[in-house]
Length: 129
Image (cartoon, rainbow, N blue to C red):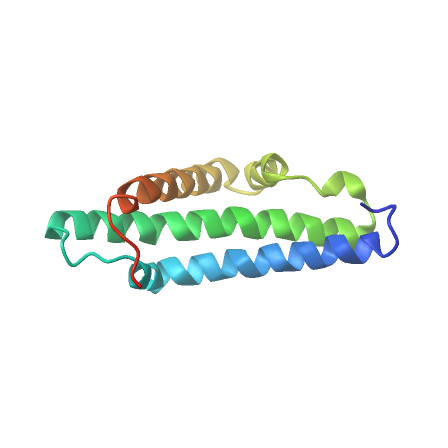
């Protein structure tokens, strides 16, 4: 993609979009905004708590992972180094190499797993219209 006309800018813009989506996912999890998308009127209280907690952990976990991937894209565009524009595996490796990397990576992994569990539980309930 770097070889395309304006390829460096496209990578940078794609990275900024990913960072923005990641920030939105963190916001959505922290504010419980995701609950506005699900009709939990017929759900028992235990299911409502489960969906809420999984979303509160899962959305920020996914958001952080997307934000790191986007940050790597932006960094690759700024430094003009295509090797730095890695995907999710590179982002996770970057987290691992950071101070307290194993702890941080464990938190992100738990967040991504919680997001997957949230989607499984959420599939049981209809979307709000």
